[in-house]
Length: 215
Image 1 (tube, rainbow, N blue to C red):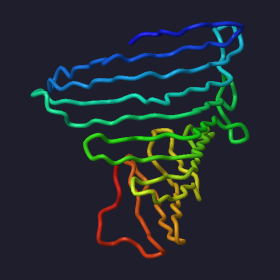
Image 2 (image 1 turned 45 degrees about the vertical axis):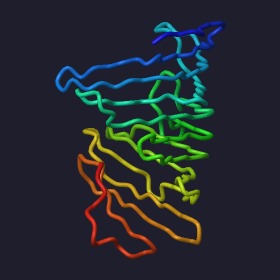
Image 3 (image 1 turned 135 degrees about the vertical axis):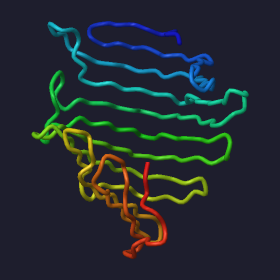
Image 4 (image 1 turned 30 degrees about the vertical axis):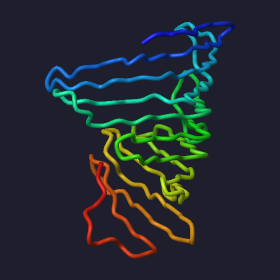
């Protein structure tokens, strides 16, 4: 990895991270991950006794960064490229913990994930995420945005109930609504627990013939 562009003037850092077929090898399996592409960013901060405190960061990768994984035999297992424009991170409380009144905020005008093996892509626009730490040590997060499938159809994602976790990182609640063209609606309700799982309804009818979604 290299930094072909780097400057720091009056609290503003402008830089580019360049990955030129950067390779990581799994010592257990012998598999490899190869990363290629570049990400540019502008980070704005204010001086403090402990170093600069970030107040805003803007990042772009219009050409994208590719991630290719190969097994020990050299066969390609996954091959994806992620590109994005106008990623903006704004801390709610610079140098401190975000609050419900001033949450950390991420906005992305557009990002795309393309899969070279399947030929499919996923694109999202107008993505917004806000998050903060709750008084009991957990977190609360809301997201919204519009997603596009490879076939051109779209859906609007929103947190109708914020996603919450406890201080151990276990999920305690959250409801996400996916509203598509033609008034179709799917609702994912998170199942409390250490694993991200959800039950689904489509058009108000529960999906009972499939297992709960899990990641």
